[in-house]
Image (tube, rainbow, N blue to C red; front, side, top):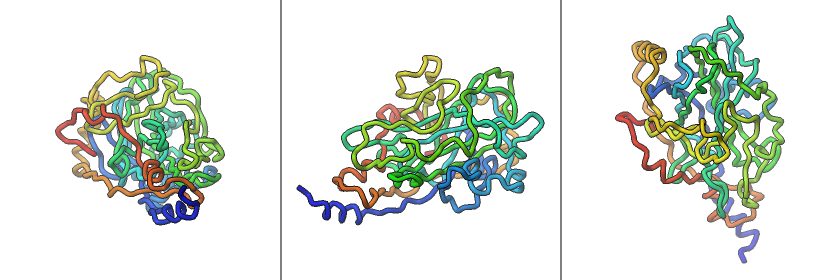
Length: 344
């Protein structure tokens, strides 16, 4: 039997640091915008937020500065449009990904909205599977250094108005104690057209969406090997579900609730390509954006990095630490059709 000392020595030799990251660019119907053109720029060198009571939880550090808000453009979209984010450089920590939205008060433009209103969650992505080697995160497909982009469909009944759309990734590599979770987020500014009559529910405030003591935020993901995982926060709207496979720009759109057998049938994907043709409203906006912005940024994955378990972990580090850092992706994703210009 391997001794505790030798196991800890092996774990200590593994790297403890990953690169930090940020949600830097907006994707709309296959068009990748420039970094911080429609997404509020941060000022913390891609570092995480660790205090759940801080207003930095809304749009990250610097996201509520008046100058930052004013210079960020607002993209016109329609309900049902395919939208998403480019990550700088990749989601290189294990943990869940979610997307939140908040409607600005009537008469307030997205670039003047501070996010103090109600927030609702439209997307949740957790694990692809949980097996004898631990949680295999859907945000960290096998053989990668983490997702470098993802897309979702806006709710078809989303009411018209100006919104903040907030991507959030919670890093759990050091979350064995309260306060150990790290939060990475970014806010895009959207103007939604149409006549959607949905009533988003449930809602919450930010800060206030977490206490920091939820089971999904205080967890040793390495040892003992978890047998289940529930993401923190409120349920998603309009369908209460969790996805177990990411939708990537340029690949076939799988749906908002992939692998969730409890989701209602109307949440299933129509099989449309993630970068489907825009609606007439969104197309006009995309054309305007293309005419006024530089060529889309090229996106590359950061080099793969291996996470180390906390020093308190006493387990088979050779097999567990590596598997906990990388999530297995399903065989279906590898067969997805790609567009002519694919962002990976």
